[in-house]
Image 1 (cartoon, rainbow, N blue to C red):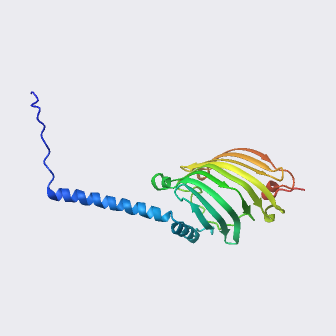
Image 2: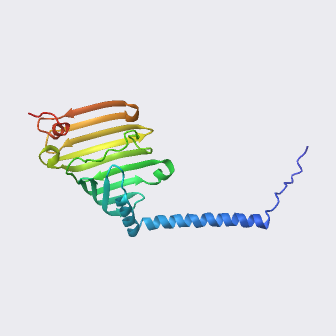
Image 3: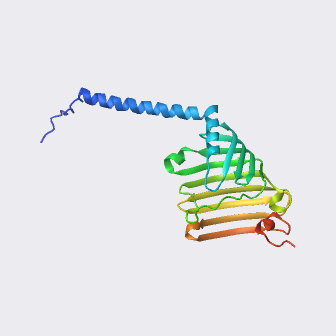
Length: 234
Protein backbone atom coordinates (compact mmCIF):
# COMPACT_ATOMS: atom_id res chain seq x y z
CA UNK A 1 0.00 0.00 0.00
CA UNK A 2 1.37 3.45 -0.95
CA UNK A 3 2.56 5.79 1.79
CA UNK A 4 0.29 8.83 2.03
CA UNK A 5 3.20 10.87 3.43
CA UNK A 6 1.20 11.79 6.50
CA UNK A 7 2.51 10.98 10.00
CA UNK A 8 0.06 10.14 12.73
CA UNK A 9 0.77 12.28 15.75
CA UNK A 10 0.73 10.79 19.26
CA UNK A 11 -2.00 12.16 21.48
CA UNK A 12 -0.91 15.10 23.59
CA UNK A 13 -0.34 14.27 27.25
CA UNK A 14 -3.21 15.07 29.55
CA UNK A 15 -2.67 17.95 31.97
CA UNK A 16 -2.47 15.46 34.88
CA UNK A 17 0.21 13.39 33.13
CA UNK A 18 2.17 16.55 32.40
CA UNK A 19 2.02 17.59 36.04
CA UNK A 20 3.35 14.16 37.11
CA UNK A 21 6.34 14.41 34.78
CA UNK A 22 7.07 17.96 35.88
CA UNK A 23 6.87 16.84 39.54
CA UNK A 24 9.25 13.93 38.91
CA UNK A 25 11.65 16.16 36.99
CA UNK A 26 11.57 18.83 39.69
CA UNK A 27 12.10 16.24 42.43
CA UNK A 28 15.08 14.73 40.61
CA UNK A 29 16.63 18.17 40.11
CA UNK A 30 16.11 19.02 43.78
CA UNK A 31 17.75 15.76 44.89
CA UNK A 32 20.66 16.35 42.52
CA UNK A 33 21.19 19.86 43.89
CA UNK A 34 20.97 18.50 47.45
CA UNK A 35 23.61 15.85 46.73
CA UNK A 36 25.89 18.40 45.08
CA UNK A 37 25.42 20.76 48.01
CA UNK A 38 26.12 18.00 50.53
CA UNK A 39 29.23 17.01 48.58
CA UNK A 40 30.50 20.59 48.52
CA UNK A 41 29.79 20.96 52.24
CA UNK A 42 31.67 17.75 53.05
CA UNK A 43 34.63 19.01 51.01
CA UNK A 44 34.82 22.17 53.13
CA UNK A 45 36.94 22.74 56.23
CA UNK A 46 34.06 21.82 58.52
CA UNK A 47 33.21 18.80 56.39
CA UNK A 48 36.78 17.48 56.46
CA UNK A 49 36.86 17.92 60.25
CA UNK A 50 33.57 16.04 60.50
CA UNK A 51 34.99 13.21 58.37
CA UNK A 52 38.12 12.95 60.54
CA UNK A 53 35.94 12.84 63.67
CA UNK A 54 33.80 10.06 62.19
CA UNK A 55 36.89 7.98 61.37
CA UNK A 56 38.04 8.36 64.98
CA UNK A 57 34.75 6.89 66.25
CA UNK A 58 35.14 3.64 64.29
CA UNK A 59 35.57 0.68 66.66
CA UNK A 60 36.25 -2.59 64.84
CA UNK A 61 36.42 -5.83 66.83
CA UNK A 62 40.20 -5.96 66.31
CA UNK A 63 40.63 -2.88 68.53
CA UNK A 64 42.28 -0.84 65.78
CA UNK A 65 41.76 2.92 66.14
CA UNK A 66 42.62 5.56 63.53
CA UNK A 67 42.96 9.25 64.35
CA UNK A 68 43.62 11.98 61.78
CA UNK A 69 44.75 15.35 63.02
CA UNK A 70 43.75 17.29 59.91
CA UNK A 71 42.62 16.72 56.32
CA UNK A 72 43.70 19.18 53.63
CA UNK A 73 42.99 19.40 49.90
CA UNK A 74 39.97 17.70 48.36
CA UNK A 75 38.52 14.49 49.78
CA UNK A 76 37.27 13.70 46.27
CA UNK A 77 40.69 13.47 44.63
CA UNK A 78 43.95 14.72 46.09
CA UNK A 79 43.96 14.90 49.87
CA UNK A 80 46.70 15.39 52.44
CA UNK A 81 46.26 13.69 55.80
CA UNK A 82 48.21 15.24 58.68
CA UNK A 83 49.23 13.60 61.96
CA UNK A 84 47.71 10.16 61.38
CA UNK A 85 47.95 7.83 64.38
CA UNK A 86 47.07 4.14 64.59
CA UNK A 87 46.49 2.45 67.94
CA UNK A 88 45.69 -1.01 69.21
CA UNK A 89 44.32 -1.94 72.68
CA UNK A 90 47.83 -1.35 74.09
CA UNK A 91 48.15 2.17 72.69
CA UNK A 92 49.68 3.96 69.72
CA UNK A 93 51.99 1.94 67.46
CA UNK A 94 52.20 3.93 64.19
CA UNK A 95 52.43 7.66 63.55
CA UNK A 96 52.38 9.22 60.09
CA UNK A 97 53.29 12.89 59.91
CA UNK A 98 51.85 13.34 56.41
CA UNK A 99 50.11 11.10 53.86
CA UNK A 100 49.39 12.29 50.32
CA UNK A 101 46.38 10.46 48.96
CA UNK A 102 45.27 10.46 45.32
CA UNK A 103 42.16 8.31 45.01
CA UNK A 104 38.77 7.84 43.34
CA UNK A 105 36.14 7.71 46.12
CA UNK A 106 33.15 7.30 43.80
CA UNK A 107 34.55 3.93 42.68
CA UNK A 108 33.61 2.64 46.12
CA UNK A 109 30.03 3.84 45.71
CA UNK A 110 29.45 2.65 42.15
CA UNK A 111 31.93 -0.24 41.73
CA UNK A 112 32.43 -1.52 45.32
CA UNK A 113 36.14 -0.89 44.90
CA UNK A 114 38.60 1.17 46.91
CA UNK A 115 40.69 2.76 44.13
CA UNK A 116 43.90 4.52 45.22
CA UNK A 117 46.13 5.87 42.46
CA UNK A 118 48.92 6.73 44.88
CA UNK A 119 49.62 6.89 48.60
CA UNK A 120 52.86 8.71 49.40
CA UNK A 121 54.14 8.94 52.98
CA UNK A 122 57.31 11.03 53.36
CA UNK A 123 57.86 10.14 57.04
CA UNK A 124 56.36 7.64 59.45
CA UNK A 125 57.34 5.95 62.71
CA UNK A 126 56.48 2.34 63.58
CA UNK A 127 57.19 2.15 67.30
CA UNK A 128 56.29 -1.53 67.59
CA UNK A 129 54.26 -4.22 65.90
CA UNK A 130 50.51 -4.00 66.55
CA UNK A 131 48.77 -6.39 68.94
CA UNK A 132 45.20 -6.56 67.67
CA UNK A 133 42.44 -8.66 69.18
CA UNK A 134 41.61 -11.98 67.56
CA UNK A 135 38.42 -11.88 65.53
CA UNK A 136 36.12 -14.61 64.19
CA UNK A 137 38.45 -17.31 62.77
CA UNK A 138 35.77 -18.33 60.28
CA UNK A 139 35.40 -14.82 58.86
CA UNK A 140 36.96 -14.18 55.41
CA UNK A 141 40.54 -12.91 55.60
CA UNK A 142 40.18 -10.53 52.64
CA UNK A 143 37.47 -7.85 52.58
CA UNK A 144 34.25 -8.25 50.58
CA UNK A 145 35.15 -5.26 48.39
CA UNK A 146 37.97 -4.82 45.89
CA UNK A 147 41.11 -2.81 46.64
CA UNK A 148 43.33 -1.33 43.93
CA UNK A 149 46.46 0.45 45.15
CA UNK A 150 48.60 1.44 42.18
CA UNK A 151 51.50 3.08 43.99
CA UNK A 152 52.51 2.95 47.67
CA UNK A 153 55.62 4.82 48.78
CA UNK A 154 56.93 5.22 52.31
CA UNK A 155 60.06 7.30 51.82
CA UNK A 156 61.32 7.14 55.39
CA UNK A 157 59.93 4.62 57.90
CA UNK A 158 61.57 4.76 61.33
CA UNK A 159 61.43 1.40 63.13
CA UNK A 160 61.43 1.64 66.92
CA UNK A 161 63.72 -0.21 69.32
CA UNK A 162 60.90 -2.58 70.27
CA UNK A 163 61.09 -4.14 66.80
CA UNK A 164 64.77 -5.07 66.49
CA UNK A 165 66.52 -3.73 69.59
CA UNK A 166 67.66 -0.47 68.01
CA UNK A 167 66.18 2.32 65.92
CA UNK A 168 66.44 1.66 62.17
CA UNK A 169 65.20 3.45 59.05
CA UNK A 170 63.60 1.77 56.04
CA UNK A 171 61.97 2.65 52.75
CA UNK A 172 58.96 0.82 51.30
CA UNK A 173 57.42 0.68 47.83
CA UNK A 174 54.57 -1.49 46.64
CA UNK A 175 51.28 -2.03 44.88
CA UNK A 176 48.24 -4.22 45.55
CA UNK A 177 45.30 -5.56 43.56
CA UNK A 178 42.77 -7.38 45.75
CA UNK A 179 39.55 -8.68 44.21
CA UNK A 180 37.19 -11.69 44.39
CA UNK A 181 39.13 -13.26 47.27
CA UNK A 182 42.56 -13.04 45.61
CA UNK A 183 45.40 -10.68 46.50
CA UNK A 184 48.13 -9.77 44.01
CA UNK A 185 50.80 -7.82 45.90
CA UNK A 186 54.25 -6.49 44.96
CA UNK A 187 56.44 -5.14 47.76
CA UNK A 188 59.99 -3.82 47.98
CA UNK A 189 61.23 -2.92 51.47
CA UNK A 190 64.81 -2.23 52.49
CA UNK A 191 66.79 -0.60 55.26
CA UNK A 192 68.40 2.72 54.43
CA UNK A 193 71.01 2.21 57.16
CA UNK A 194 71.56 -1.55 56.79
CA UNK A 195 71.60 -4.57 54.52
CA UNK A 196 68.10 -5.94 55.12
CA UNK A 197 66.01 -6.15 51.94
CA UNK A 198 62.93 -8.02 50.80
CA UNK A 199 61.36 -8.03 47.35
CA UNK A 200 58.06 -9.87 47.28
CA UNK A 201 55.69 -10.90 44.51
CA UNK A 202 52.66 -12.59 46.11
CA UNK A 203 49.47 -13.97 44.60
CA UNK A 204 47.28 -15.49 47.30
CA UNK A 205 43.74 -16.70 47.89
CA UNK A 206 44.03 -17.27 51.66
CA UNK A 207 40.46 -18.47 52.21
CA UNK A 208 41.12 -21.24 49.66
CA UNK A 209 44.60 -21.97 50.98
CA UNK A 210 46.30 -21.02 47.69
CA UNK A 211 49.61 -19.14 47.75
CA UNK A 212 52.15 -18.35 45.03
CA UNK A 213 55.18 -16.52 46.43
CA UNK A 214 58.27 -15.25 44.65
CA UNK A 215 60.62 -13.53 47.09
CA UNK A 216 64.18 -12.21 47.15
CA UNK A 217 65.34 -11.90 50.75
CA UNK A 218 68.53 -10.52 52.26
CA UNK A 219 68.58 -10.89 56.06
CA UNK A 220 72.02 -10.33 57.65
CA UNK A 221 72.75 -11.36 61.22
CA UNK A 222 71.51 -8.81 63.72
CA UNK A 223 69.14 -7.25 61.20
CA UNK A 224 65.48 -6.38 61.40
CA UNK A 225 64.21 -9.37 59.42
CA UNK A 226 66.06 -11.83 61.65
CA UNK A 227 64.62 -10.13 64.74
CA UNK A 228 61.07 -10.10 63.36
CA UNK A 229 61.29 -13.75 62.37
CA UNK A 230 62.56 -14.73 65.81
CA UNK A 231 65.63 -16.43 64.32
CA UNK A 232 68.81 -17.07 66.28
CA UNK A 233 71.20 -14.33 65.22
CA UNK A 234 74.16 -15.59 67.19
